[in-house]
Image 1 (tube, rainbow, N blue to C red):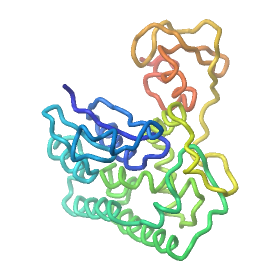
Image 2 (cartoon, helix red, strand yellow):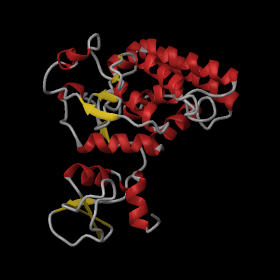
Image 3 (tube, rainbow, N blue to C red):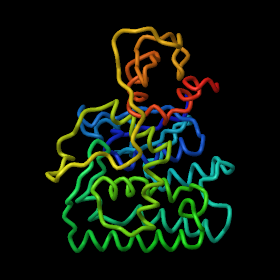
Image 4 (spheres, helix red, strand yellow):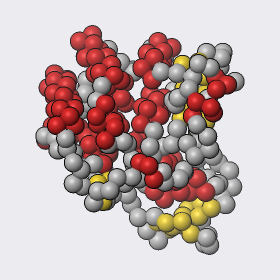
Length: 290
């Protein structure tokens, strides 16, 4: 049995995004199982892996259960020491650990008032004094790290700290929250990150819109990079005969910029429709570089 990572809805589960990035961004394989928020309570669905009651949860091949995101990050770093989860420089590593720990335990007002929602973006979000305090603290610690590391990520190369703050960047962007230039640039780096774009594209392709995450604010287009135009189609002749992801025969079609491509199922097609340039295997096939 391979390691199995249980995740929640791609569009809404901020801690699931963090856990997925800890695997995907660092090249660690795991079997993904989605816990459907519309099916039943998460604790009920995770009851067979006691004491886990939330997502993400990692169940290792030997039956070990890891149900806390920070513990998951540390355990992955211990089991995969060459993956680069933490910076190699001792000072930057200590900074990254402090950043991840503070994210893990703080910013309750931001979480409550601005839940992650990758299906919508808003303007005119009310900023209370408590929310402004959270934003000010985030800018302080981001600036502290970036001034010392010189970027491009918080502690130089991408680390656990960046995975932990990816949903915060999504919240700041998705609710058009007021931050300074340095913080805005860091947020933009997350929105442009191909791994983040792949996660969002999957969220748009899978799962229902959950109305309790909606806010009654004016809506905006998603503030990340504008995807290359693409659409699902029912008829046509694909340039490829096998899916770029699975290698299985083509059954579902997509048109983009006058060209037709095929995929082995609706999910493979739809995640690609949502952001064609985010998927290296598709891009390599499309551009003839594979």
